[in-house]
Length: 306
Image 1 (cartoon, rainbow, N blue to C red):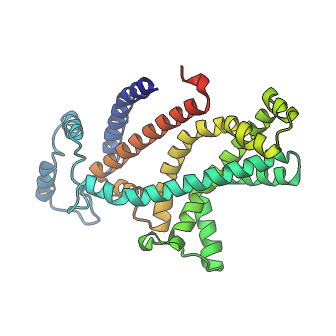
Image 2: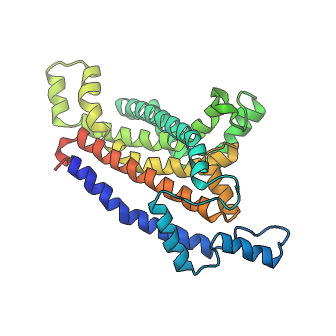
Image 3: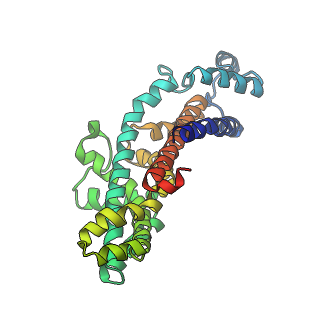
């Protein structure tokens, strides 16, 4: 298992290099620059700024210089947040994004597995139909539509929750973003759990366990659940990517000071180094999440370890 993990980590380097190259050249092909303002600055000042940040160098030379700095863990200075480096901005916003993302994934896993199991155990009843109808709604409605709807209902009309801000991450300001971010994942996980549980309940060893007189609760928890979660574990990698990209929208809508908000502001301001730093950081997180999922899959199903 250790050799497999090391091999996967080594294979991630070409992937990250490709991500860096594509992101580097795409953002520079976009119109505008990091020092464009509503009021144009004098040409000599713009030339001085480009020289200071080496933006007047040939593009290939800028890319090689960026790779050299990146090899030393240096994402460079931010063009817009002049008093901060990109590393400082990322580590300042990462705890907020990590809290929202981890709570959303935890809520999605607990609710999704619970609802999917209930639907499978009560197949073709009103419970099954209600869970699957809710799951289809959660899949069909994107987070950038669900967020304003929940804000309007729970924040504006009912006044139960604040509609924006962070306030040091208290419960009231955290609940609405976490619920909004987790809803699509609850839907996917519920459907996967239901399908996996139905397949496992028809297997031979479950029939044998029932023939031995084991209680149904023991059969579900100890024997069926572990095998039924295999599709869910496989989905956790893409789910993590979806939560990461979804948090960009959620943080912008709710005014949360996380990495996603910096990414949006950096893209609007053509802050090359900030956008690159966030993209690379997200890429590393997604690769590590997929590696953890693969290792968990091997733990749940020993047959895949070879």
